Image 1 (cartoon, rainbow, N blue to C red):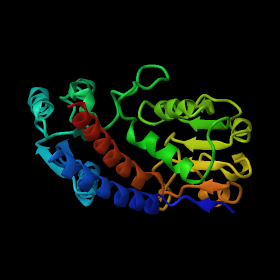
Image 2 (cartoon, rainbow, N blue to C red; image 1 turned 180 degrees about the vertical axis):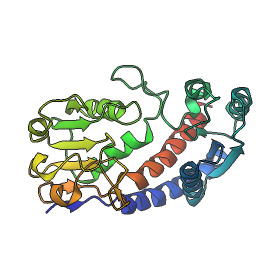
Image 3 (cartoon, rainbow, N blue to C red; image 1 turned 90 degrees about the vertical axis):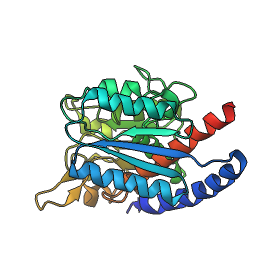
Length: 284
């Protein structure tokens, strides 16, 4: 039976550690890290995410502000707010909550955030499979790597299978795994013989958005299974891309849904903000 990778507990430990760092650095540099989140419109899920991010930032002693803008906001108005935050020396992290309304070009908004304040980690990912040095990694992929490492698993030399090739998780997490010297396979909806490939993987990261795609008979005994998927089952309950009941019979370590990657993604956002703050104050 697999050991459960408890994302909530691991995140709690990180918050304690980061709170101590914030206090130390605030004393050294005369100010606290500042995370500013912009939300346009009233999307219910986005409102919950933004609130959780604000709570997490304040939990570790950061300055945090949510800038709420109406659904009718124009792209020009949003870009003006971003430009103001870019120019503000007390702002270390800027995050525009996605999705944005249809009249706003998402890519233009992402590109407008100053690279040194991009806590989402979009700028840090080059095209292809490389990270730009000196910039933070995207939050969910960074969370996946951290969770694997908490199991004591040595990533170097392992075969890691990433199921999903999305720009937000699949491709970036494959890049981070390559940087850890894993041998990486990326699978997707057109992949043939997924079961056979999965059975050779020491690490499986499922990020495709299809409930229970990965079943126990696809898991190599002792493998580390990281489930990024968030889906609803027939009863309307949250579930992942992995069939937890059967996969946990064969995996060595496995993340639950909820309570695995989700809490760690927000913890990594706070870590990214702290890293951006340190990079900026240490430049002076």
